[in-house]
Length: 85
Image 1 (spheres, rainbow, N blue to C red):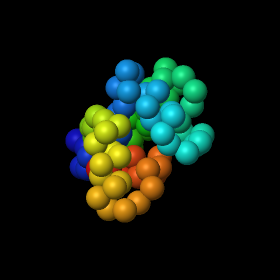
Image 2 (image 1 turned 90 degrees about the vertical axis):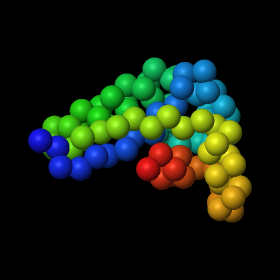
Image 3 (image 1 turned 30 degrees about the vertical axis):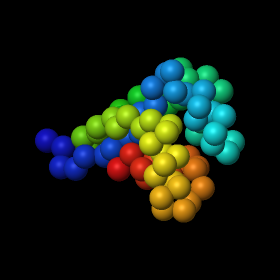
Image 4 (image 1 turned 180 degrees about the horizontal axis):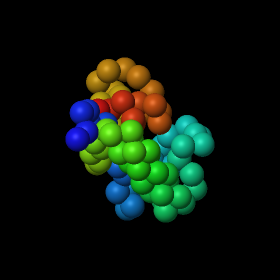
């Protein structure tokens, strides 16, 4: 039985181009949505193998940008993953 839940950022396919255009280049955000999505599936699998539950959290571009503005931080992939928690 999983003892802890790991929240994993999920980006909708139709919003992926916004993240690609708006975030600084980062190897965790590949050119194609499908490549990114497959990486997130691997993340889920790895955590579940370690007896941790996972839960996808949909992050919308506009919400992330507004959050970054409120806390006065740049919009980065690291902020994306933190925001999903």
